Amino acid sequence: MIGIYIVGILGIIVLAAILFLNLSPRFGKGLSKAQKNEYAKLDNFHNGKFVNQKLSSMELNYQELLKEYKKKSPNTKPAKNILVEKIDSIDIENYSRNITQIIWFGHSTFLLIIDGKKILLDPMLSQKPSPISFFGTSRFSKELPISAEKLPFIDIVVLSHDHYDHLDYESILKLKKKVGQFITPLGLANHLVKWGVEKTQIIELNWWQNIEYENIKFTCTPARHFSGRGIFDRETSLWCSWAIEGKNEKLFFSGDGGYGSHFKQIGEELGPFDIALMECGQYNTNWKHLHMMPEETAQASIDLKSKLVLPIHWGGFSLAFHHWTEPIERLLDKANELNLSVTTPKIGEAVILGNRTFPKEKWWIDFTDSNKSIQEQN
Image (cartoon, rainbow, N blue to C red; front, top):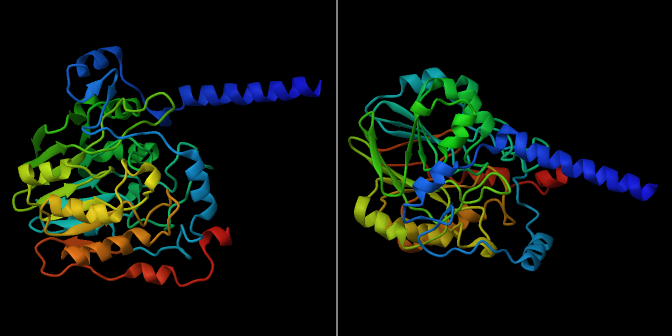
């Protein structure tokens, strides 16, 4: 009888998991048959999936991962809550129409003010990058510079791919009624439409396609990564980086991805860039093809011909085994060797293009001065 009960309980758990995977809106929506047939004409879509320019193994060495897990840094999170610089909707509305400003929200989320337009990049504004509220790592800062609810009207939301730390269901629900246009890579619109965004509000682009919207040019550029929100939808939407060109400045946003020759190609065809927002954290040798090491971030920035680098994909969540400040420290070491200019704003602190000086304070030191980590406190 005990065996029957156990089997019954396991059956209920499996059924609940299947129902959750199929019914929860957080997982979004996959490609239709018609879309697959259409995308089959593209060079970067094979056998029902998008592919990288260069072969990038998705296979993980689980024995190595277990070793990494056992010896991981005890300081994968800050010793205390990261304090952020607060902004409000009036501040944002009053920003000069002639000055380009970039405000980091931690990890890979940015508010970009350029040519008087407000642009949100990969708006992940929730506390956990996970489809399940009780599962996953929490944000290092209890607050954001401004909450999704308090943001003013946003002209454009730009998305790089559909992973939970870049495309957040709850954030989209809060933002969708005050966004003018969404610009995404191919296939990602399915998620947004399922979540109530009007199809007419979404522009989808393939690598190297561009659109001029509100007098700002957006070019969808290659990245070496992957996509997927559920078990069965891996690589069914495209992943990308972005080149954004205003009247006077040109910016690059890396999204996620491993190092490759595409950076040099982008630099040659679209550079030089005034600033590059570059991934530098959540790496591991086990997935080195899909996330750059910090030293590669520095080299990629050189390849792009960028005058200034703003490190991203760190300072928000712990999604790897390294010390939480290791990405920025390793990047700064390599940047110094390569004579590469790097800005390190606090979360919420504006980087103003056109200024001769940029934030360079090592603010993270203030949050590593305790013998106790957040993990130990919890």
